[in-house]
Image (cartoon, rainbow, N blue to C red; front, side, top):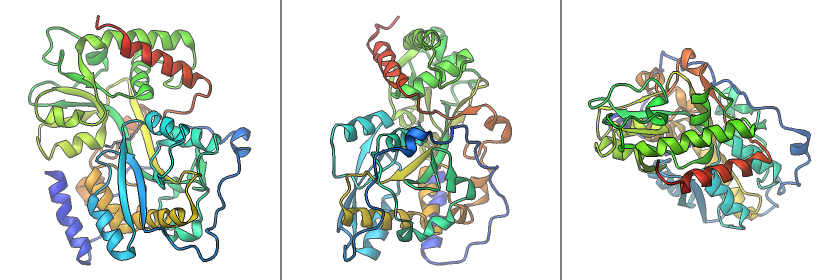
Length: 386
Ligand code: SPD
């Protein structure tokens, strides 16, 4: 329902009609808790040449490797109509899946959409090309706080794409608002949500939920704390119908599941199918994240130029508004926010109020402990249901 209503606004934008400026403004920018880049990051392998060599023409086709349902396909049509460049999409379900594929040598993706902590890892590993800002004049439209994110100061490698939070979605007609992560980690066989709940199939998100419930830092590298979180995740399996990062919101909207660990915008889009879908951040807290659009260092110059043109296109006010209208995630683009309706900007599930903000943490790179997280997650996944 929300997307339908917002699409009407998109049509107005596309027709070039003047929208009344929004009176309301979103809450202040999300606090950035990640550290400034380490010396090691600044010593990363040299990125690809910033500028396209003279005479390079943009490629006629590029591939965007993105999360599912994370862009309005109409944006591809408008871009191709204007520039004659086709954007083909492939999807991943987690940062780790995308990262493993690229680390494994996959090429051909001119654009990727990693989250904040993964950008940090990719910069450190020399996997990202430096952006040629001369090809992205609409960078000026970014909100000031997104021009200088700690994991990529000055948008040297990436441009913030959308931002949001991780919490719990539920079917409000069937269950009360879950105020604590206990509903997932202390599964009650007598609860209607027992066996009708999913968790994200995502190592860092799953551990973040368990760690925040335990009262620990979601970026801990303490082995005892991580082992405790692992045991909690195994305990939760009794009440889960599975792990799912792609269709969980649809399963709640369809009433097949009643609750899911997931990302705010996905649940808000699912309200289009069932207005009883609701989203909350439990009292112990949750995750705040920023997804970013970046170019792999292996991208040839003609594709890199086309990719930068597409990034610039996304940063246009009307296209940035179309993006958030479709995803129902908050925009890092100040000019786009001017075109978004007041009910979007004032929706606390999209722009969390300060009280919720204070309970959110960013996932950060944990260096060598990444492998520990992965090993423990594999043990969770392979453990028998208790
Ligand atoms: N359907 C698109 C969801 C994108 C969510 N990305 C968030 C990752 C945070 N770790």
